[in-house]
Length: 266
Ligand SMILES: NS(=O)(=O)c1ccc(CCCCO)cc1
Ligand SMILES: [Zn+2]
Image (tube, rainbow, N blue to C red):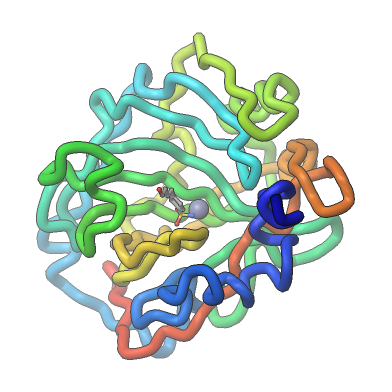
């Protein structure tokens, strides 16, 4: 078994994201993610406001949390959690949320950037198009997924996210999974104003990098405390030098190519 396979850390094995194209040629494709959102080049689209994005979450949709080896992932059966309107032509069902973050005392961490500026972390709420049978069927289709991205910024504590972080100690290693036996509404993780967003056609930001995602990037970040950002790094992952704290599990922005990022606001 090659060391990169044994140490399945896609960010630290070999040259990391810049080498992904060797195994996944689509990494150099025409609709890859994440991207830098240059606010001078985004285009307001009144149609996005005419048919408002409808985001529905429920108290009973989060079932378990797992250490995927590259992030935490809260998995849902999607009950009562659906996304429609805005840039979407059909109903998408919630499947899971996870996040990406940076290193101690660094400003990087998010995957998307805004005018070249990173946030310390970025949350992804992943949904699949219900025109397909299930997530697995949808995951590699051009209109298969819709992901809501929420930037985290340092500020006041977010008790709701803290409830999820309290479970991190129970999933110390890749593959570890525990049930969530309390009500948690993922809507808690949306910023106060979720009317203003950017949207563009992109991809998964980790291998297999399928070009199947309609991205919906919230303009307003969610405030979490500096301690909560630090707690993200208490999750553990495998590295070529053994098990260590999980951080820098983000892909840096890739070229926008022939795409325009639309804004739901003027
Ligand atoms: N960072 S992301 O939101 O683009 C994202 C979402 C979902 C997956 C899972 C792909 C499973 C392939 O079988 C991978 C990445
Ligand atoms: Zn992600």
